[in-house]
Amino acid sequence: MGRAFSVALVGLEGHIVEVEADIGQTLPNFVLLGLPDASLNEAKERIRAAAHNSGIPLSRRKITVNLVPASLPKRGSAFDLSIVMAALSAAGDVRGTGRTVFIAELGLDGRLRPVRGILPAVIAAVRAGFSDFAVAAANQGEAALVPGANVTGYQSLARVALDFGARAQELVLERPAEDDALPPVAVAGGAVPGEPDLADVAGQAEARIALEVAAAGGHHLLLVGPPGAGKTMLAERLPGLLPDLDDAEAMEVTAIHSLDGHGQVSALIRRPPYERPHHTASTVAIIGGGSGIPHPGSASRAHHGVLFLDEAPEYERRVLDALRQPLESGELILHRSAGTASYPARFQLVMAANPCPCGKAAGKGQDCTCTAMARRRYFGRLSGPLLDRVDIQLQVNRLSLAELSSTENRESSTVVAARVSLARRRQRQRLAAHGLVRNADVTGRLLRGVFRLPPRTTTVLDRALETGALTARGYDRVLRLAWTLADLAEIDEPGSHEVGLALTMRQRGMSA
Image (cartoon, rainbow, N blue to C red; front, side):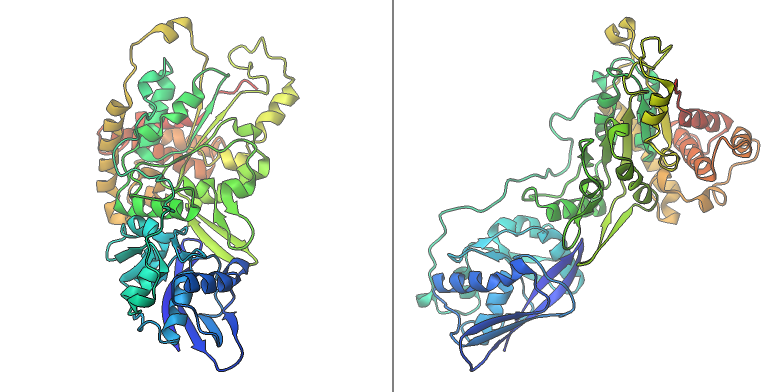
């Protein structure tokens, strides 16, 4: 018998897998047990070839490998190294592997290739009490980001076997000529070079204020206006106003991007991510899913960052409505026949929309060629329940020549970000006792309890609720906005002015 350890990922949740190998006395065969998928079943031939070309061929007798727990689905090629080490240990070619966790794919020539999701896998193993890891050299930097992980990166199976007691004279130890590292995609702290600057936006004083409030409190934002008014420019500059991610947030975001596998993570992602899917994107692309274990979508990749939907009414209605649940819970739980995966999705939603299909219904709308029915049908794709979850709903007007030419009141992102950072600091101090960091996350129970405002302050808000102009959800969202306005104004709690302004920011002007 031989044993080794690896990690199975179900979404971002990792499970320790014990790999057992037994050498039988019957005819040559390789049996893999424990709910392996097709790609994992193919590991049998990869492993045989890799071991042979590394100078340590597997036993010619029957090899039975069991992946424990057997009820947990396993997929992918990350188990290759653990399987071959368990088999070599069973044959006595290497000594026992102890509590080392092996995560790597094997090439036919014995090279170790990088795999996706190495960061969440190592995080899960460290939480389970493991500290020693053997991974592909291209994954070493990413795995070493986890505190408490003692990571060794290897170029080849022969080098791994040598470190675990194989006889050097039998091994093929030539250094591989190629580098399998994926291109790095992460940056460690600081602003991203070339990040759009708010100083580039001409005019739009109200929209700039709304953007600052959204950044300060983590609020969702809808911008409605004619083409060319600056909606997209404003949305693109929101990430530049947000503060860097703290250690816990950076680890979560980096783990998602590691699992997504679009590049080799070289450092913790410190800047809030920005996702801008095309309006033809499917529900699976936005929410996540796919065959087998569901994979993350744009909503999860935007965790702790911004999800921008340009031309929002052009998206399919079901795609937009699928965002309603994560907007409330900050989490996506995807059920498929192969298993259930949970991904965090606490993002800021920013939507931009024209007032009608032709985009000319703003102002007097004299040039608009759309019928009243066409206007209602166009904007009706944004359902009432979805809009009720958007805190700030603002009309963005077309720029005049004077506004376009003026250079006044064009504060840079650095100046605005400093005010946002100060407001965030006030929120953290106020909400720390409740385990929260942003006004957008404050529950209705706290708003009507610990942070309840006097009746004279909420008179206008109470009247809007009584007349049906606001839902109960909208009532709470206006209160959260009011607290953010107070934080930006550096006052202890919002007054009637902040509440009235917050209510105004939620009322969008529509000509249709």
